[in-house]
Length: 138
Ligand SMILES: [Fe+2]
Picture 1 (tube, rainbow, N blue to C red):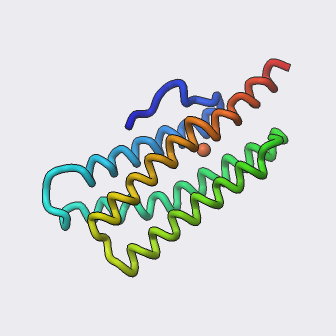
Picture 2: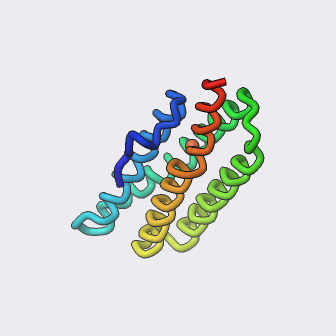
């Protein structure tokens, strides 16, 4: 799962954060799918979970602040999709607490992260990018 130049929306802060998200999620997937015993991967799994909870929240805050600043018309929908993702991560965090970091659940979580990241960066945020560009052309 690779970052692509076409994902750039032309806002350096947000583009850098998206690249970092891709790097982290890719590294996570690689670890989860790599050879080796499950216990040796647990540190990486924990680290990624903590990263997702912190970094994604600060990324969303930055993105929302930027949308407010430019009066982005679709901000409410965009915020809603952020809330849904944060909720989804929280549900997994809870399940990991209750069920333990079992391989099947972690694989499922990894799959969700990939799907979400691609949808978020390659679709939802592209609309924001188009708006930024249309503003610049005014
Ligand atoms: Fe984003």
